[in-house]
Amino acid sequence: MHPTPLTRRSFVSQSAAAVGGVVLATQFPAVLRGATEDKKLKIALVGCGGRGSGAANQALKADSNVILSAVADIAADQADAALNNLRASHPADKIAPDVQKFIGLDAIDKVLGTDVDVVLLTTPPGFRPEHFEKTVAAGKHCFCEKPVATDAPGYRRFLEAARISKEKKLGVQSGFCWRASFPERALFEEVANGTMGKVVAVYGTYLAGTPWVRPRKEGWTDLEWQLRNWMYFTWLSGDHLVEQAIHTVDKMSWAFNDVTPISASGMGGRQQRIEEQYGHIWDHFSIAYEYPGGARGFINCRQQAGTHNETVDQILGTKGNATINGFAKTHRITGENTWRYEGPRNDMYQTEHDEFFQSLRAGAPLNFADKLAHSSMVGILGRMAAYTGKVIRWEEAIASKEVLAPQGPLTWDMKLPVPDVAMPGRTKFI
Image (cartoon, rainbow, N blue to C red; front, side):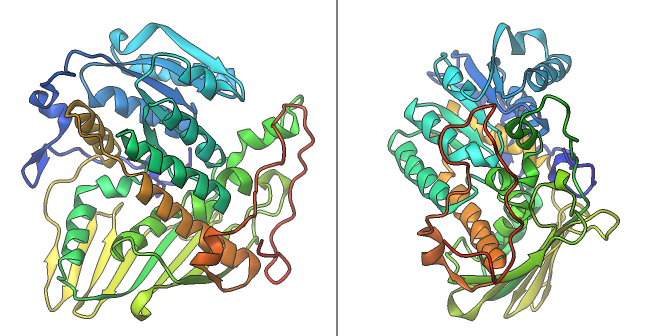
């Protein structure tokens, strides 16, 4: 979806056979033994863009007895493109001959009315709380892309559905793909074990170019134009801090063992992308988080054409420092205890699906819903602080009553003006 080589959507790595003695599910057929081995798992894809097609491709590779039974999107052309790409990449028996295609704003309801086992939720994030809530209510396992909400009410709605998903023993796999990367797992294990002492600060960057934009076509209503350019509208994406750079936010949370930040302050703005086709989101952020014990987290992110690209994480400890550059394959710790990752490297996108389907076959579904919600809300907190120019505390943020989505039911012919660009000192915290 994004043209820059530093984004997750263009990341390609070589899969490894094993790490720490654990073999990938696709290479270990014995993992499918048990009462559920003969059950063909039916997969449904909800959201047929580039990330959705990628997730479906990986899900179909993750298990020897799965089939794509349904796809859903707001646009027929996107659903058709996804199906064509998947048919070209997989044997005929991986795609149901009568695969169902649902188009429209209510497509999720039609999908959940079918006999499906695993739902891939890969629509724009603004729909995630509602879609996840409905998926859990229907008793389906799901792969849930990040982030899971764009505002605090959505976060609370997702969190309540997460609670129910655990009661129902449903599987919920996370789209925070770096947590499935072997080098990152190894480095963060060293951090957790105290190799570099106590973590006192984390500095992360996600500096990228401008993603794609689809010029408005004749006949597109306000809603269709915004949905097809969802990244540029905060109600759909959360802004790029919450959508793309949320990976950097998640790694900061990982370094701090997923504890809750105390507060956030920040700044940013819209310098380069000022035309209406870019909606109303910002093109750069700088966020400072306060953590318990005086620790600090710093996130800098940018989406500007013609600028330096970088995705690097620096973790500072009392006994050493860690450097992570996943795309450059740099994972090391310097200081009292020197360490460098020299193990196998994997395709993290594939691994997260391999492990998820393995857990379903084993009867012990993975459920990362809480961590999905937590990291997403940490990103939302940062955006709130930057948009308003205020120091926002965690308790204030999660209690926010601001709903970003349009009020009332969505209809194709509704009037949907572009919101004003946030201005610190004038934009109010709600």
